[in-house]
Length: 90
Image (cartoon, rainbow, N blue to C red; front, side, top):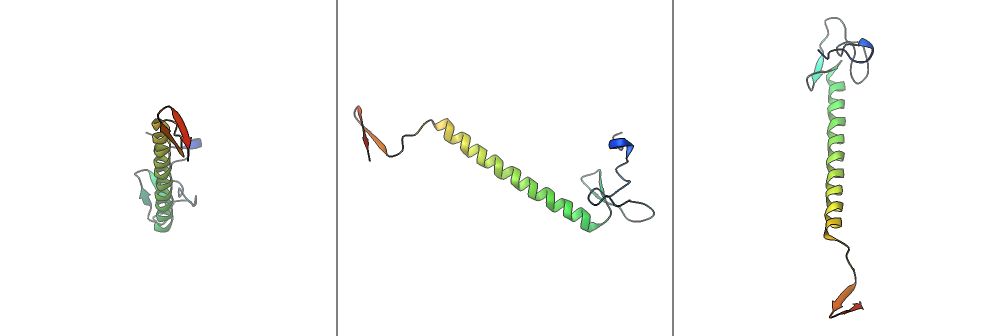
């Protein structure tokens, strides 16, 4: 059911971040359904890393969107003005 990862390692065997074994009667801190952590600190660190990655992804998407919008506008002749059939440089 997707509970085992590479080489048959179960996702509840070790902390996702620090790889510390999750054993005994200690608390297991979960994130996004199937990601286990040994402590609230490890889980918080992963959440912060995920938020930072999401912000970078969104910033790249905005940058790409602006770049594609400029390309869709077509070539621009900066500093030139059309007057009749001749082009005058400013």
